[in-house]
Length: 483
Image: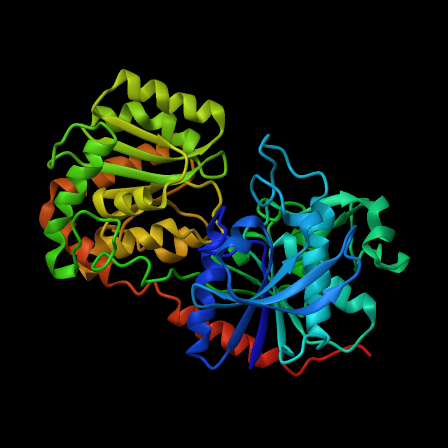
């Protein structure tokens, strides 16, 4: 079986978040299930610089303002199709925003181009690769099902995965003709969304199946509170919607072989984590104190991630005698709050603003507990890494956090199955209660060691999720339509 994965970023070529990690790791796991995946990605400079065994295989004289070539390529074990369109992708800055920190003005066309090329591949116009299923990811690929429907040509069935419903890709209705969509596409069951064109909404309305990245999130987005304007549509399509948990690449995230760590370790040698803790404390200017409970954060500093609540709870955390190592960037006001806290409490709060992959690995291997206080979280990957590295997660009971962390309440501990601490609701007070519970477990090192063992034994790989995706692909592979 052949699957075309359509995505705006893929690790390790280009990454802004967990979407890239999923797109980079899932193909290898699917290969074990007999599924061949080719990933279609824009030809950003970082992508063009990384690819190997490049061959042009398809040409377009005009793709939203200029010519384009589809390249067959490889990189990091991935089979790739890369869109070389300099007028759309050859520019400095991130995939979505300019160096000035604002969205690229032509994002509507940059990602319509991604979807348009995906449709051409789905029609079999690239020699040697005719997909049985097209898998679109997030709003950037949301127009794939729309092009397939409104072109009227025979095509493979489509799946769209919602990695974060908060990002929907909404653009003025006036661009419809330029996108090449017919007038009747601008309808309630098409691309129209509150008088605009909704890229994600189009995918959710038209794709043959919808997946999200955890079962709880699949339930939450059908509620008015969690649906972000799309709950009605998602409820109506409930029979076509399924939540499949994410995994992580357990070769990249492997404490036994991780080159980022000063001291590698395994389940039976996790006492060696203390060397990583000491190095992290030194790197972030914290007191080198092996007996102090060290919390960590690796996150965007945003309202969604609940990091403002953690800033408010910092006095409580510090008063308990604990430390915090924070790595991330985002909201200026949140960042300023942690900067002030680090200045006021030297040795207790350490920060690094930005993203450093090696430092992120060191945090997971060095902290005692990783805090993930998200207000909503489709799945989350950082808590899965924490389990793998023996950093007990302290998480809000939402979305994939609720699905992946077993709360170490008294009954769970008696049964020997806890892997972390959950808190709810997502408030400062509840977070502080969670901190107290984690500190209580820390003081009981016998219990702590058992929970740490449980965490590190948890299967957080893509093997299980890949089986679910492969089954879904096979279920819909015969649903060819059009033409």
